[in-house]
Length: 317
Image (cartoon, rainbow, N blue to C red; front, side, top):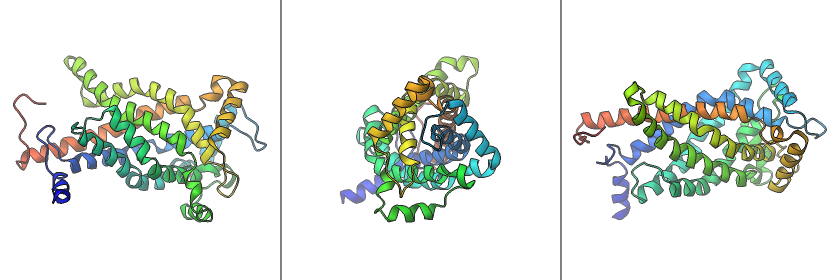
């Protein structure tokens, strides 16, 4: 009986925020899909900039050279490069985001937060969702990994066939840095950005600042901190996930040594390869995700008001 009651509650509109858990989850997934399509070209370009940190002989190259090589790949096949990895990312909205947002919102609901994400919910979702997220990220990066050599993205089925020969273990390369990356993303992007946006909107409402502008300002404020924390972790992921599946796997320690050697040769430019692109991507991604999420949540709430499922309290926003 309790199982059915819990399932039924999933679709009950909350009196606190005017949305059901199902509608909140759908809004998060919709915002994620919107963000994924918009930021994919920047995501692809940033990966190549980080991936081309080494030449064919395995020696670290100047960040300017890596950027030039990534630019050359994009110029040679702009459409293919911009769309590379998009298919697994779109599929990943289901395979990655359903577990992540499900766990995130589930913990949030248990804690009585009604969709307002706290640090404990963000941390729990980051750790528990990693096994679901990592294979998709690995496939996405493998699709782009050999663009310079072949000029086209690697087919998903070919990646899966290669991984199957090793019982799919290669798909879990990079899980450790992913957990750190995902935790920072949840704490700053999912939990921090909405609170900062609300504060900015309240403070600047007298100047006619609306939801979109306040969201953009909040994303611009959060992103440099977020990227500063996650860029080295992103480098580790790229190093570990772009080596050949049928070749020798690169572990966390070896990847860390590679970043350290990069820093010895090129200083902070070596450690923070792709930092500027990361900030641009972060602002675009956070703004697109939250704006898409807000649009859907507002639409759901308006529909709930029309059909009588929710009656706003007098004086509520």
